[in-house]
Structure formats: C-alpha cells, structure tokens
Image (cartoon, rainbow, N blue to C red; front, side, top):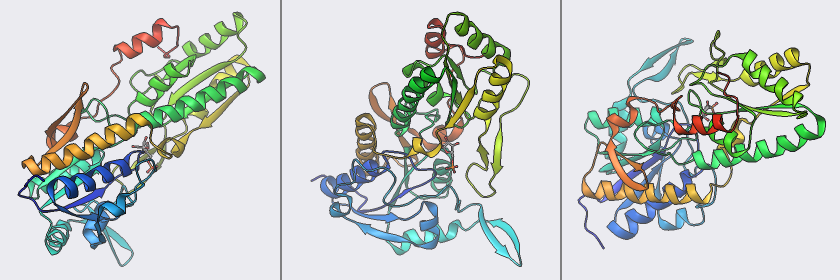
Length: 365
Ligand code: F6P
C-alpha cells in the first residue's frame, strides 16, 4: 500500500458522453482505494452535481462490472458551468458565478482533490477551479479526438469503429441500388472521425472541415466513377465540413451549453447537390449519437484504464493542475492550461490526408 498525502478525492464526468467513461471511473476508484487507501466521492451529472451537492460515496463494489458498458454511471451534462450558471428571475435568465458553492460542497465532503473527466469545455472549467486554488487533475475525453495536448482521447476509437461499420453497411446497399450514399458523422470542427472512417471503410469522397470542398470536384469524382462502370459511390461528410464558398451548417443554437453551436445538415446539402448535378439517386444517413453509445472497443477500454490509473498516480504525486495524456505510446501529463488552449485539427497536408489522396479518394479540393 502506497502512502499519499491526499486521502479523499472527488470524481465527475462532464460534457457529452463517450465510450470509455465508465472504464475511467472504474480505474480511478480501484486505484484510489486499492493502491493509495483513498476514499472516493462521485458527483452526479457533471459540474451540476458539484453545484447542487448531488454526490455519493464510491467503493470498488460500485464500479464492479462497468468496464464494458457505454455511457457514465455518474451521469453527465454539457451545461452547468459554475462560472456561467443560468439563473432565471421574473422570466429573465442571467448568467452568474456560483463557484463558491462548488468550493463549499467540496469542503462539506472533506475532499482534497478532484478528478475531472471531460472534453475542452469541462477541462477549461477544471483549469479555472485550479486557478482559484482547487487541487484538480484532468482526463481527456471526446469522440472528436480534437484535444491538442494528447495524441488520442478515449472514445474516439469506438466512434471510429461505429462509423466504419456504418460505412461498410452503406457500401453494400449503395452497390445493390446503384446509389450515392452520404454518411454524415460527428466531430465538431475537426475531421478525424470522417477521415479515419472514410479510409477504413473505403469511401470514394471524404469531406472534412479542414479542407473546404468544391462541389464540382465531388460531382466530377462521382461522374468519373460512373464512366468506369462503378455505378455507386459512398461519401463521408464531417458535420463541420463546409463548401469553399459557404459556411458550416448550424442546426440550432443552445444557450448555456459548453458548445452553444449544434452542427448538422451538411450531409443533406451534399446529397441534394450531388443528385441534382449527376442525376444519381443520393441518400443521406446521419449517424448522430450512435457514435457516442455502446460498448468501448478494447483499445478504448485499455486507454481509459491507463488514464484512470494515471490520474490517481498524478493526484498521489501532487501533480495538480495537470491532465493525463498520451504521447506516442506513452502515458504522460501536461498542464491543464495547455490542454484547453487550442483544438487539434486534421493537418490538411498531413500523412493521413496524403494517404487518402494516393488511394484516389476525393477530398473535395
Ligand atoms: O463533442 C462530441 C460531440 O458528439 C460532437 O461530435 C457533436 O457535435 C456534439 O458532441 C453533439 O453534442 P450534443 O449531444 O449536445 O448534441
């Protein structure tokens, strides 16, 4: 048994869920209890639970059997920022700082350090709490894989597997019906899911936010395939993709969310444009939240477990204000500040894009 100065920790999951959250929670609790004799308090529904004091003790029994299960047993939300919290009075909503409630609840539970499992929004809040004196450690989560300070977030591999399977299925029906099948995938402003699933699933066209597309180039690709007697095509479009002469498609604005812009609709726009220019029946599938659900892949289970163990090792070593990360094959850590500074986009001239192009995949440029 190792001795650590911190004897009681809190843990929460924040932002959109991702496969592997439960695996991290399990690793956090097991390592804290078994290796360092720490006790663990879980806060429910992200920072909302910290603000409203919705908390529960977590033992090893509470995390038994959750490794392969999607979602998060703690619940999560991409709202409830304690520094920008909505208060409605007389029908009018204003946003106020309620972070003092967070510090109060942490002290009520006798918690000495907090593990925040989240994406850029949750980690930015974690960093602000750290700046105000809380001992915080972060774990990088998101299916989008767009955090700059780590080579991979957990959740991405599972989302990629789901998108690839969807593309495989669309492929066969596209071929049977001689159609163009468009698959719209998530990823926010980064094209990692689209590019990787497009390569893995043998797409003919991949459109990503980092390379604004020319619809004429896409149409030419479909027509060229028709001339080669390939009567069907598959197109993967990232939700954040945009045409050369246009902008990203916003479905809705959600005030109070960590990311108030809800993307969507580009798949439909591409399918319509392709159908009217080629005369080929073009159909769209929006994969949506299927990418966030389900059992994590073996890779994500292992990465999540490594992150959970790494986070508690950081707590025990006093490495506060840091986030565990993956550098190449190795587990490492970086200051939270660096983790939330900028998003990691697909390099437009990077190796993965070049690989796609060498195979003849059209990137719309
Ligand atoms: O960040 C993860 C993600 O799934 C994005 O890919 C997507 O744009 C967004 O969250 C959707 O969020 P929500 O579930 O709030 O609609």
